[in-house]
Amino acid sequence: MTATDSHEGTGRLAGKVAVITGAGSGIGRAAALLFAAEGAAVGVLDRDGAVAEETTAMVTAAGGRALALTADVSKAAQVTQAADAVAAEFGGIDVVYNNAGVDSRGSVAVAEEADWDRCFDVNVKGTYLMTQAALAHMGPGGSIINQGSVAALVGVMNFAAYCAAKGAVVALTRSMAVDLAGRGVRANVICPGTVYTPLMEPMLRARGDGDLDLGLQRTLVKYPIGRLGDVADIARVALFLASDEAAFMTGSVVAADGGMTAQ
Ligand code: ADP
Image 1: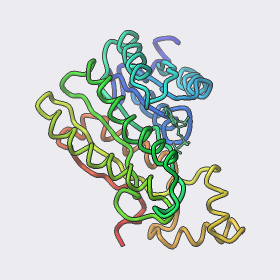
Image 2 (image 1 turned 180 degrees about the horizontal axis):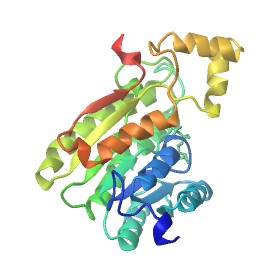
Image 3 (image 1 turned 180 degrees about the vertical axis):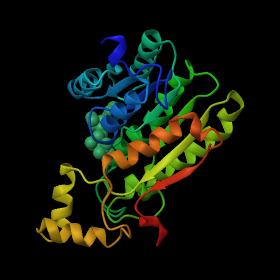
Image 4 (image 1 turned 135 degrees about the vertical axis):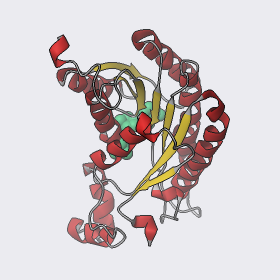
């Protein structure tokens, strides 16, 4: 990388260091690319080291700075090691985007205990552990962004553990906001609506009784804006919350859902 193709020194996150969990794919990867393009050095954390390396290579190829980190956010020792590595490489941590997440299966009548525990471990405990590890390296001006979901705000069928876990992430965000305000750190939560990814196709097909287009139509009925989200829709909201443009926002629950929870 040369001085001329580096994003460093310019952009909405110039001079900041961000850690993004689950940055090996989907929203996390889009956020890593966007944050780096806006001047941040990015810790690209994923449980799957190969995809973390891939995102890191994409950031570097675009002229940004990134460090790949293999860690499971539900394991304290792993996230501490990752946060320490980012701080050692880039000199501190300014932004944490707790994006890593897993979904769940079934209504409360059939939800399985192991699935419930896994869902809470990654979505809720992972958010707590990663934030705690990063706070050891974070000063005033820091920003925590948590990934909630519309499932925290309305009941989504056959998704009991996920709804409960994302509800807990919203409550945890409010607790972070009041506890961390005194040290100049903000915490906000994004509640995305359904973001279209190829991984969703089986679910959409099932909703359409085997027909993908019908499943999509049935899902879109819930979205006044007439389309599902894409990863960039959510990454751009995270960028705003990460930046100093959002300096007066803390404890906010920001729906990015095409109006899904407005009706
Ligand atoms: P989305 O489209 O919402 O971003 P994805 O499933 O595409 O969802 O991405 C989630 C990412 O989070 C994946 O790269 C996955 O490996 C990562 N991930 C899942 N669980 C963990 C975990 N426990 N620790 C770290 N990363 C995780």
